[in-house]
Amino acid sequence: MNEPVIDLTVISAVVFDTDGVVTDTARGHAAAWKHVFDAFLRGRSTPFDIRDDYLRHVDGRPRLDGIRTFLAARGIELPEGAPDDEPGAPTVHGLGLAKDRLFMEQVDKYGVAAFPATVALLHELRRRGARTAAVSASLHARKLVGSAGVTHLFDLMVDGNDAALMNLPGPPDPARYLEAARRLDLPAAKVAVVVSALPGIEAGRKGGFGLVAAVTTGGDGAGAHVAVPDLGELGVTGRVLPLTS
Image (cartoon, rainbow, N blue to C red; front, side, top):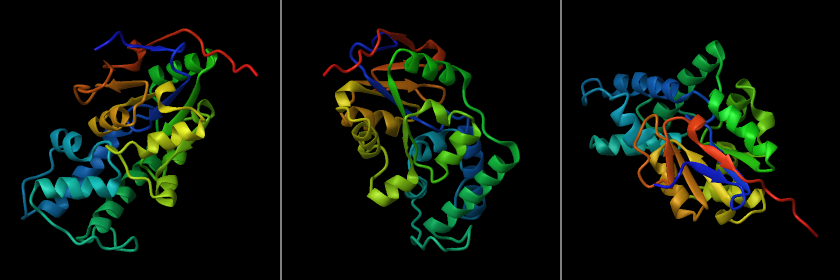
């Protein structure tokens, strides 16, 4: 891998995943998934592994995709159900609604924190003229980012609501990151993506982004251009030059 740095003579904007990169929510997501999956798996299969199963099958994927991927790995098929299913019903939507309700109860009770190193990086990028965007699979991303107090550090966001309206598939498909680049009016080659999950790394590479940077707190960063255990170790050089007419 190359030196962990964002070179703003080459990169003009940076797109950040939210969960596990901007907001410290990955542990809360994993705990909510374990609670829901373990209740469902009782008598069917072994319990959900809060690290390995989460990282391999759920992390970085839209909620329903994560359910399908994890259950397929256990050889379990469920009916899709519908968005108005009872939370916890034995359907893909039912499990997703149960997880969503449990996670948001914890958010409402305890709030959300932003990673200090990410906040510092965002300030430095913007000071040097780079634009920034956030991408999330969550329907609640704007609430989560707002609760963390960092909405003002992003020029725009592409969240789960946008993805549903525009029928944008989730990682490892690059569609959501490419939509952020489109809204920034930049080609992918001029944009860096910062992710924490393997599907996000794959999406960044497939999308042809100029830099794919991985935060490796939960994985090994395989496939990223640069990987760091903490964004405090990702440097910034150069400055984005203003457009001239």
